[in-house]
Length: 448
Image (cartoon, rainbow, N blue to C red):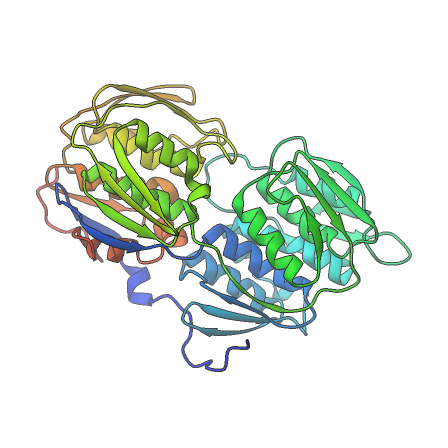
């Protein structure tokens, strides 16, 4: 249904954004229920997918995040009309303006998800010129797989002066279905080519496709718009191209990473919590590891209840693409392992620069030995509050969690990262008993 009330804008509070620090009082017990917001990584790609439609797309359960605001600005710079009301977003794509001078290079460079737009724009318009993407500096994350996939569908793609220029070369000005095998399980590349192939002529088969739930969410919405996609969620996806896609109304799925973060918050504070809504199978590996270390977790419909034992035990994890342990929860889980008995081995296999939080944990008293991309955590430490700074989204959440377990009051910097991926993170924790204050200046605390 269209959104009628356009006065209430889905915009982040500017006072909220300008504050730079979280003051976190440690050793506080938690209790109660936390509501999980819509999935950031799903909402961003669904917003890009709306570009494929010739009618409006209405999204609900859209999280209030800096990244969503950035993607909204990007769409507006393309001439797209947006109507917003709280967590609802209507995207009207009847007019698209792709003049490079009107596109916000700053937004493209700050948001990796901006590159999702290339597939839909190319499929619908026949040519596109957009700036290279950006995002958290946690690894190389090349766009080679995206480019090779678009070329396989019949596009000429070049990089010129920090722009990606893509153009259809067939006389019909339409992409052509192809069989494409990805060299690695790239979520972004799978989503880019999946979207582009919906309007291609003929059948496209994607082999070694990523299997993340966000890809399933994307395929579900595209099928609701009239696409013909089968196999999303498996390593082999087939797409039968159609001539056009309609608009639709669609609800963004719950954020599995946010849910996992709050499960770990329960464990690290040794506090009982209930968390909903969730899709439990999206969290199977995380739930298993928390159970292994001593947490009792029960599922009832879309609600998880977690009761941690007081004496949790160390367990090992190795990050890997879904359905493996998510790289986005590696830093939060390492924070937990610093508080349990025994030694854990944490191996990061997805991003090569995703151990930047270790130095900050060590400053709080955590005993961690890093060898390449493998960390050995000697747990059961007496963590002490101090001032710590995050360099990326998930490490910032992890630093809030480790501060909850420390003795004293910590100051966490890097909120510009936290606001990219968690809606009302501090507020949700405060509602279940945490003591977290958002502030503009470094407060006077007992941190060292």
